[in-house]
Length: 209
Image 1 (cartoon, rainbow, N blue to C red):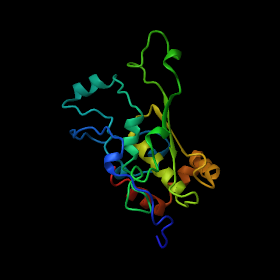
Image 2: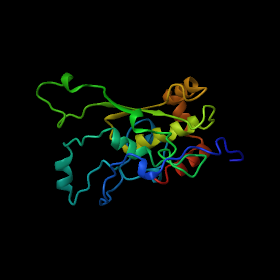
Image 3: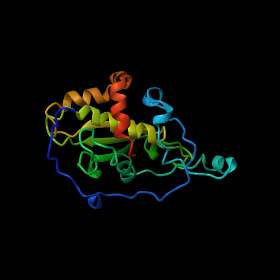
Image 4: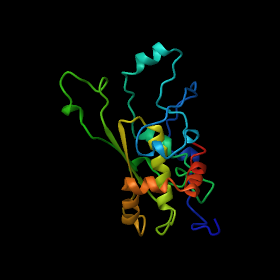
């Protein structure tokens, strides 16, 4: 980029970032996720699903199909904090663009609404993941790109029972309402992801994830 919008951003030390990263696990075959972005991102752009338990046999894998692994706000943060900022060679976590307190998980279908004969271990609860993004400056022209990067990362990594809602945090950007409309419009998001230049930027942002 010809001009840096924020030449001196505040940077957090990696030691100060909340984390509960999993230890090394045996990689499994990547499965292409379902949802809005599944047809717009090539297979090569998808990282292994961190929530897909590794197995040594097909029978063991089938035994685990019914199990629902709980996912919390820290897990979501660990997925998006390593995303690289499109302007600086720094992560969104280190720039405080994404923050743990700004991530919420809301059941779309609460357990109390499930039939009495089912449990959350046999029937996954639909959940909306909401991430509030804080741009480093209030007039950041890359806010939409950053929001798209967070959305793509979560769409590619989370199981289909999760719905992703990425927004600009209130009071942190001069055109937050306009950016939020763009990020929340499925058709506009899909159209944007057909842009080759933008896809190149997003792939670079997700290289460290």
